[in-house]
Image 1 (tube, rainbow, N blue to C red):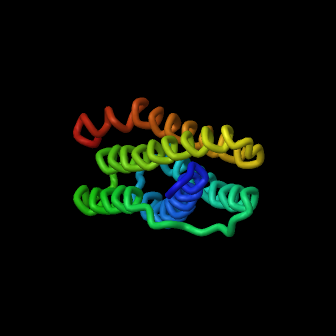
Image 2 (image 1 turned 45 degrees about the vertical axis):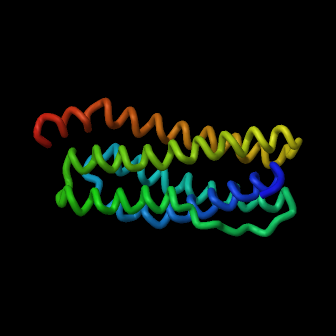
Length: 165
């Protein structure tokens, strides 16, 4: 990579791949979730992720590139960690829900970091269509993270700490 534009395209491909992998991993997490609030949040996350993929395709189009992904090792590691957690906890309940929340928050924090960088670069380059879409995706990732945090702190973590009752 020799330019900021090259870096922008690399991160854009990274997030396109990451959002697609997130979409593929969510059904397993929905199936494992016990708490109703968490199930609703995961359903909302699935819709938001589909929207992110569509928005990323528009960003590619706005910069004159064909949408394509580049393997995101970081996200693959987070997905594997979430899968391992589900196997290790072995049963639905507050402990597993707390782990699902933490796993998804790690994915959101990655997205927040990447979308923040992409937004800054698009802003600097004057790519207004990309700026608008990236700002929406960044805000969406932050809102999803906060929603998961609320679920965790308003019951799931306490239930998990008290033995999963």
